[in-house]
Length: 84
Picture 1: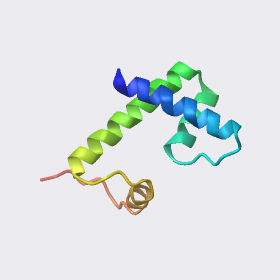
Picture 2: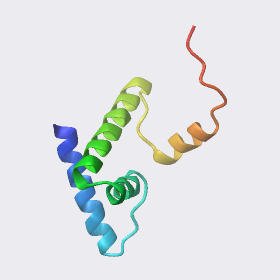
Picture 3: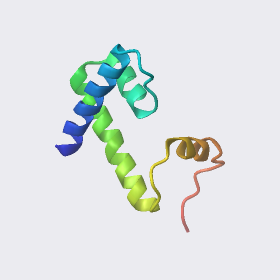
Picture 4: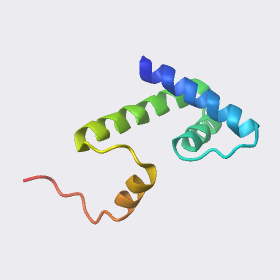
């Protein structure tokens, strides 16, 4: 429930920033794009899901969330090897 409330807050602040002409990037831009394709509630649930996955990954990897580093790591990945 807290992730959903946080997602709604992110969507609202991203919409306000976008309407004010400020640059919106990263997860906020992704959330606004989802909201344009669907309705607000589905976008909030999708963003809450993404936030949960980000939380899990930061706890699992014991690394802070860095969007640019994460994207570079994802783009340079060669294969999805299962641990032995």
